[in-house]
Image (cartoon, rainbow, N blue to C red; front, side, top):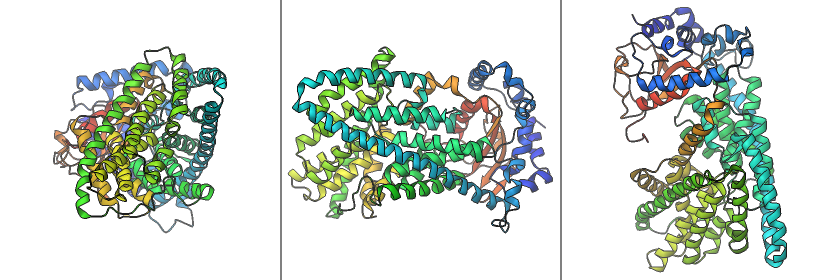
Length: 623
């Protein structure tokens, strides 16, 4: 019997299964399987004897192990529990950590099974993290709102007093150097923040929460004062995740539970930024984790709802983008125009991705200290001649919805916003692209609607609806999160009447984006971040546990476990099917919808995720 078989047999011990059968899914076998990894911090020892280590695994694991050796200091050899037996360190799914004693004895949840106890205690922790993250995002929203108002006032003043432009330029150079220094010291605080959070959840990166919060607050406010085309939604997601991390370090019982709470904090950040809890919850599932795990759903929902309550208390019940007055399109035949609209906006969304990444590439050829000052100087002509392009783009969206600009102005909005967002974001300043993408899509959709109106195809009242549908299409094409785009539009409009045209438009845009092989913007930004920063910030110790959903059409769908090319450094401890756990035998056949629970050394997280994604993702969805 090979090592993988012995690990599975060990997982069947009655005392282990009885202690954790109702705990977090995968807990029944995780403890013994974790111990069965043995000396898994070395590549060869972690591999089951029946599984050959491929060259790709060997290269990935060697690189990860080299990073771990470089980061480990002599003082790290102190005889702590984790150091004495790092590979026996149990995750939140393990029997010893699954149900804390005080939870079992609680009068409130005593009548529940242990699994339900764990779920509802986790939901309570997520609600606390969501409240903290929501409050932090509320402060950030207030600061950026103030900064945007100051920027509009400053550029209006400069237009009337050109002599003061020289003073503004000197201030921009000084502030640019300060922001450059901050992002150099805390690279996790640069850019959108969403790729960094994905790296924490999926690639084992560590996030210095307090320094990140400092850069986000100070750097983000300064960028808003100078009018850069940046959104607050991406940074809000990271702020929510950082606040949740600070809380979870005190209340979580394992690293895996801490990551679940960080994912909940990320959902809370988007919920508080938009006053849209369903979109925040779906974004955590669809974009951050790229799976619909029940535990992620639970934490994301709990944190999002709590953050939304806090945001509504401070900012009122109206969403950030209120489309409640937008009426349904006038005829069923107009629905057919959603497909060409989605195609066109999908091309614009793909072009936006290429411009953002291209600008980042060009900026990287410049000295690091000069990038931010240059992006601030670009804001001067934009603020003087195109003030509606300043900030994230809320003013553009309101213009497209209420003012009915001319066709030429709408086209100009698309071009200026794309270029200005590229020059702003590409420099590495602490700001996001979520809202600018929505603004670009809104202007593009409005331009299409205006053109069709001039041709006599649609009614005047349909133009605003086209603008909103274009917003969802741009998000679907650029981020490749169509469900989030649809839900966001529904929440902003407060009505389900727009769901069908929005869905047609969003999936048409996604089809075009996939057809021309456009990479999801946040995934590509994460790859670039890992290439330049990831090695020094990866978790180095202990074991990790992760679950991977099997998608229809994937290599694992319909295959027997014996035929799967599983990671050599991991152990498959259980298969979750519906509401029950299945002990994995070589003859067990995997079905779409199953969750494969893998235990592996943390230093191999990147290679394990790569191999399991190749096995479990459907051929249509793999990018």
